[in-house]
Amino acid sequence: MTDETPILRISDLEHAYGSIDVLDGVSLDIDAGEVTAIIGPNGSGKTTLIRGIVGLHEPTSGTVEYTGPETTRPIGYLQQRPAFRPGETVEQTLSFYASLVGETDADVADRLEQVGLSAASDRDVDALSGGMTRLVGIAQATIGSPPVVVLDEPASGLDPGMSVRIFEVAAELADAGTAVLLTSHDLSLVERTADHVALLDAGEIAESGPPEAIRETVGADSLLSAFEDAITGDAGTVTVRGEP
Image 1: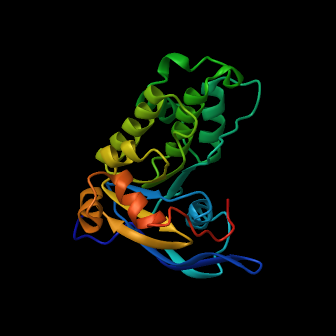
Image 2 (image 1 turned 180 degrees about the horizontal axis):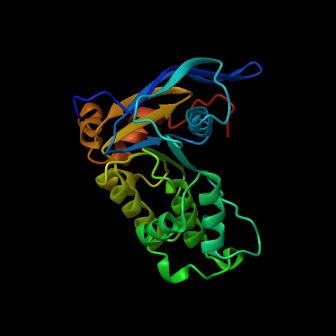
Image 3 (image 1 turned 90 degrees about the vertical axis):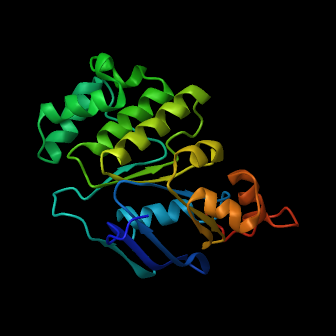
């Protein structure tokens, strides 16, 4: 962690769907140049938290404060299931999005090179594999060079090799100075890649810190074991607040 002001500060975030409290006072700092991973069981509030951070809905209370440089696009976002306009190539898809945020085709070429898809620029988006679709989604999320990039389950359902590639891209973005915030159930890749991990359970942060610090805190030899100890407890059950 650095001594500088976090580029994104989430403070006491709460969110309720009717009578169901999904987030209960979540606070988290996101630093530039780091990969921050939010992990937790299904129903723990991860998607609600991500949607609140990127501005897709208003929290019941609390704040999300961006403190980075002025830019037309402070936060880039990859949703769990990216969808693109049918019948277009990868390059056309990204060029259309670049035009919406005031960027040029040069930025599109840079983004494709960054995720390793330069050779697939002429491929129809409808013919992409699941992994390539996620990589195009990351390219889209990084158009305009937003200082913060949020990736919601970027490796979900992918084969191990492509999952590794997705996390490599996330690490490369962080190495270039971008603040990367992601959610994932692949705890081995999170442990290898993340600088900071927040364990979310029943809408609250159960543990937060570098992976090695979390392991030490709960006396575990892996992040998976730490997850099991901190989240499920001895009963092997998980308390959730109703959010899938």
